[in-house]
Structure formats: C-alpha cells, structure tokens
Image 1 (cartoon, rainbow, N blue to C red):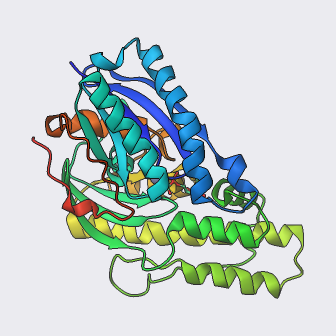
Image 2 (cartoon, rainbow, N blue to C red):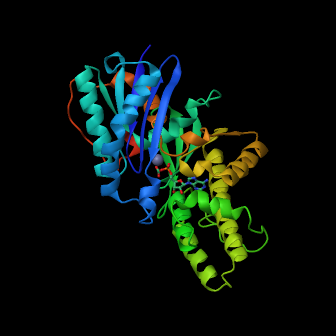
Length: 340
Ligand code: KG4
Ligand code: ZN
C-alpha cells in the first residue's frame, strides 16, 4: 500500500491531492485563479506562477491532513512536469522535488495530458484499455489510441486552435468574458436549434485531424453581419457548440472505426460540456460502443489525476534526484509503457 501526493500547477489552477494504491482518492483540494486572470481576458503566466507560490504549500498541508499522513509516510510525490506554462510548472516541480527530498521519499514527474487521459480511472466504473481517448482541453485537441497504460498512439490532432481555445476565443468575441467555455455553453441553452448552421471543419475529407480556428472567424463574420440582438447571440452560441460537438462526434466515430475499439474516453476541460457528452453518448450507443468520462470536477485541471498517474507509475519513482526538469511542450506518445 502506498499513498502518492499529487501536485498540479501547469496553468491557472493550483491543486494537490493524495491517491492511495489500495484505497483510491483520499483527499483533493484546488484553488482556481480564474478571477484574477479574468481582468486580463486570459491567463497571465507571471501572475499564475506567483499565485502558485502563494497557494501550493497550504493546499499540500490541507490534503495531507485530510488523508491523515505525514510527508515521510508517502510512497512518492508526483508533480506535473509539463506540458504547460514553464514558470507555473516550475513552482509545482520545485515544491514537489524539495518536499520529496526532505521527506526522504521518491519523486515522479508526470505528463499533464496523461493525467487527463487517465482521469476516468478515478471513477468506480473505470474503462480498461484498449480505448480511444479524445483529449479536449484549452491547449490540446487530440485523438489517442490507448493500447495499454503508457502505450499511446496519436491518431489525430488540431492543426490550429484547440477545442477549448475555440470556445474561449469565440466567447471573448461575443463579449462573454473569461473563461469562455462554460459561459458559451450556458448561453447556447437559450439559442434556437434551427436559427443557423456553421460548418463542420475538415469532416468532408478523410483523416482524424481537426481545425477550429476557421469556426471562430465564421462566428465573427456572422455576428458582424447580424442585428447583434441578444437572441441572435444565443443562436450563434448554440450553432457554434453544435458545430464543435458534431465535428468531434464524426472524428471519434472514425477513430473507433479505424482502431476497432469499442470504448471511447473523453477527457479534458471541454469534456465537461453536457451537449458534447450527450452527442457522444448517442453516437457510441448507436454502434454498440460506450463513452466514459471523468466526474465533472476531474475534467478540468486537478491534482487527483496527477496523484493517480503517480500511483500507477510508482515503480519509476526517482530517489535523491534533485533535477527540476519541466517541459512547455512534451510528446505524450514518447512516455514509457507501464508494467502490465
Ligand atoms: O483541461 P483544462 O481545465 O485546462 C487545460 O489543460 O487546458 O481545460 C480548460 C478548457 C477551457 O478552454 C475551458 O473554456 C474549457 O476547457 N471548458 C469548457 C467547459 N468547461 C471548461 N468548454 C466547453 N464547455 C464547458 N462546459
Ligand atoms: Zn489540463
């Protein structure tokens, strides 16, 4: 039995959690910096790093206390080592390494997207590999064939904006504030389904890559040429959400065809979108497959998923290594396969 402390600081969420290999998730805590960055319409990297410095120690103390553990009783300390904002990552990485060293326990640098990818394993009804994973966050839109834990093959990805980025930018140009995804999704509810239709980019040719930047431009031109009424704004939000959900549905269906897998895992912030979930549930059910999601709290950035991957990768934990390596970009497919 081993408990792993997870630390997440890749972007604008400071988080800590404890995951036990036998007992599962023991504690998790999160501080969102969203209000601070909202004034600037997006994440300000330097402010994010400074805020992590202020919040991370308290969050770690809180989860250790809730789990009833002292640092020396941990099996390892896992921290997000990338991809993400370098200054923000460095806070979690140096805190994690220092704490591990001081407590005399090993440390584990974790890939943030592997965290998102395996977050559905935090749920009681967890999917077993092989499965297709759709990673849809603010920085990534990827389709990954998961052949086993740590065995990832990239099937397709966005050639420009990530799906979450498209939600955020579209929300911004409609004046919905930051972060835009949830605000745009809420507005879409009052839009009329038949008012207008936007294109489904890159679906009329084969392949599993995505492009979302054109959709945002389409929204802008349509908005500028409209009467700019509140109802039209809602109609446009609805049409945008439908276009994104439908595009993702088409590509996920193709990825299931191509791999022959019958499980689809949806992870990352946009995976919290209820319309996307209902579209993907319907598509998978119709073909006798099934879609799996993390709980809503574990779709967006959190440390539970980092502690979980740390627990799965415990065998690789490094002792007495004080190197603080972080990666702004990091290829998911180059990770070591986990022992079966
Ligand atoms: O995974 P995440 O928390 O952070 C990254 O690693 O990027 O994802 C954040 C993204 C943001 O772009 C946010 O607008 C989007 O996920 N998002 C949503 C929803 N909730 C969060 N997009 C659409 N609908 C939502 N309900
Ligand atoms: Zn993330």
